[in-house]
Image 1 (cartoon, helix red, strand yellow):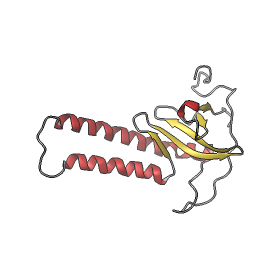
Image 2 (cartoon, rainbow, N blue to C red):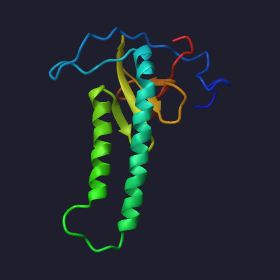
Image 3 (cartoon, rainbow, N blue to C red):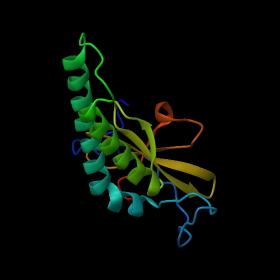
Amino acid sequence: MPGTANRSGLPAAGAICPKTRPNKAGRGPLEEERLYSLKEARALLPATVRRLEQIAELRGQMRAWGSAAEGMAPAEGDAPGLDELLASMNARLRELSDDGILVRDLRSGIIDFPGRDADGPLCWCFRLGEPDILYWHRPDEGFAGRKPVAEDC
């Protein structure tokens, strides 16, 4: 978004800061989804970025595996290398899901941390390669509706 970031790469002073409600303790299989404050989402970001980077690496390995196997006759049984790659990727995706993180686009590394403010549900939006969680949006607005988070948020 033009005009929304300052020299530090953070959103400009005109950005807004939705006031989130504290998360309810715990989350069981039948309870509501995990809701994050901006502070909670940012605390989880380093581990989340590592997982996204691992997923990107695994996707690259799968593409390379597919290119190498292209044109070859199908072998007996399943391809052992591909099985391990898929299992590793599924494990990383499951870890993100277990944390309540919503994967929106694997190719771009776009994820959302669900949250809530006085006006209803929101998503703290992050894209792999960004330095921090700098944007948020309402669930029905998606990535195109991202709004900058205020620096003092």
